[in-house]
Image 1 (cartoon, rainbow, N blue to C red):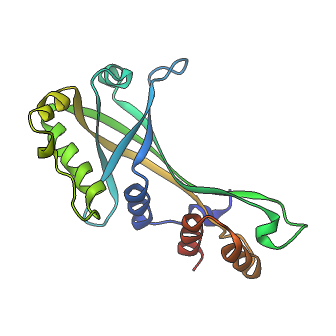
Image 2 (tube, helix red, strand yellow; image 1 turned 90 degrees about the vertical axis):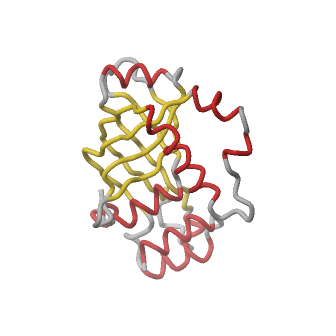
Length: 198
């Protein structure tokens, strides 16, 4: 793997999780049949901006709930923007096609906490609704809120390790990169490529 693809900082981790909070969470206990699920997660950061934990919630009937109470170790995978890059985008026929992508692999110890359920929901709702003209609030559910909230449980996943790959064109020659940035149709991928190649 090219070294430039692993050159990222705490601010990049925070940006990725903030923009793409839906992550795969998988148990470590059973190799034959690991429980896995997509869950929305948000980061908790130290004073230096480093990721120290992930806050989330899941349904109590999710197989992960039982599995992680037995063994709290979890693998968590965030994926960001991704897309195929054709030789046509590079403006070269003797250039091999590739795929640009972002991934972040986290090993964590996940602990459930009933007292964290409501704060975890509030944190996620506030994050996802923050840019709306009239942000939705849980109070709109009235009496249904307590019933729905009772079916889920909050958790905190303490980060043990974190490793990312931000493959966004850092290895391209300037003229090739310029062609890709000007011709690729995925505006989000192009924005991330600019972020990592400027």
